[in-house]
Image 1: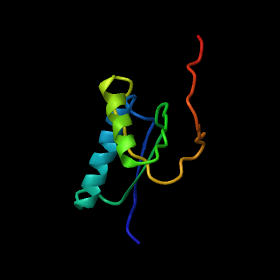
Image 2: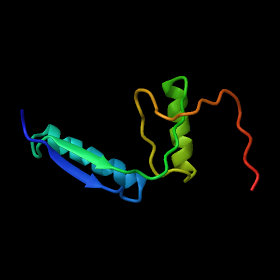
Image 3: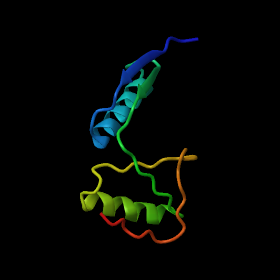
Length: 95
């Protein structure tokens, strides 16, 4: 069994930066520049949207980033723990 490096952080305050760090770490490990690594971190607030197909998912990602609502959108694969499925339009909350 090979050694495993443990990296702990409390999140980086930015979803885009957090995704960039994860991506860079994966690239380094895959190229053999870093040992097998387990990263434990606590991310900031996250919202998941479930869409029926890739085209609608891409449309949503473009709209969210172009409007400035979200600086980074990433695709999740597999079950989303704690997700609530909404089947119809959602009315905005009154403040």
